[in-house]
Length: 351
Image (cartoon, rainbow, N blue to C red):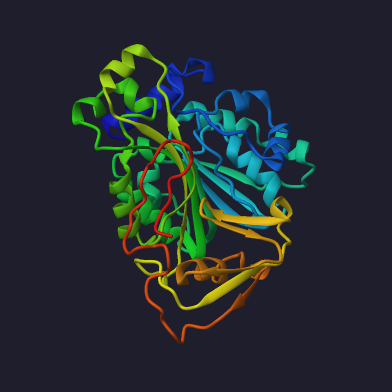
């Protein structure tokens, strides 16, 4: 491990003994979990929950039977939530580089197997650095879903993490994760501050750099599901950070080769048939695509593919072909990037 990795491991292994030791609210989930997540959380041990340092909700819906990889799994909280949602036919692999966190996660495996009523645990934890996933004997193209909760900002080579994640996903697979982003590039002096880095602030990517990294990694059309402002609530650290603004954002990235750089109009439409237990009456793809059950909705080509070439296909009816192109999808206006707006959850991408 390099010096930065050692500092991060020490911060999460020694300095932080529980969430009460955090000096800001950056590593805290800002939204109330939905009912199915709350119910799953109630089955998880207090020791695991007390060492949770995430910033969002990182498990999407329709995950039964999936093979999931958690990057920076910590004490295993999200892995044990996912364990219940995928069922005994699914499986979870958690990767973390901090010995103290891995120790907590591993010693709770049997407790949760019994709690969930499983004959065999479907969770496995591996000690490793998410910047070196190629060294962990993880099979390329073997995961349906990759999740991560406020960890990418702690990596030095964030582009490599995204590229490796893309390689590990199956075609049509998804990376669904929450992290902290900034409205500008954080100065190196602040990046060198151990506390600011450990608190998930000074390692935050400028949002436009993230979009470019995601596209270079192969994730052509990143979609925002939720974004909220992060308040530091620590006068000394606020003075160091000046007027840099930070946001907790949850993205979903699909491994689909046919996605285009812009949202293009082919005259297509979809209808949600229902069937996803957590979203029986309406399905929300992202913060600007909401599909009520039984209603035919016009969509751009990228959205069509995100539903047609993924695990969501069986829940939708699809209308139209690719025979005629009508230009940019109405309302997109060309290559409009994701923009952090007023902190009211209104940020969006191009359509």
